[in-house]
Image 1 (tube, rainbow, N blue to C red):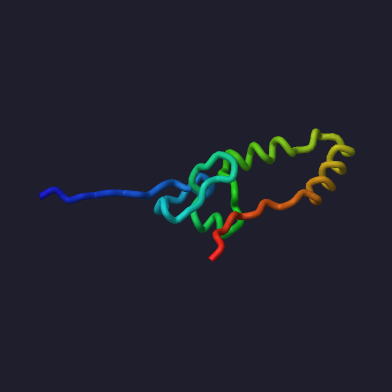
Image 2: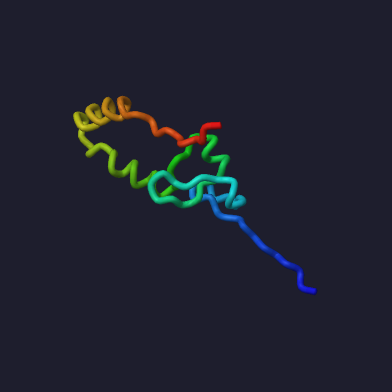
Length: 86
């Protein structure tokens, strides 16, 4: 008889580790898989979406632009995790 070998593992798009699909959450922006350990560390976006988010909020290179965006970045609201209520 043939042995059944099912796999429900997915690669985390943040750290690259392979985890069970049921032990993770989707990326905030694109919905790709992020493992539970990364979520516990506060990761809410995959590597690509985080790079895009950093790129869109990066300063333009002038000292005035850095100071202006530095204060704006500190006043931004941190992302919140959507945890089920039980």
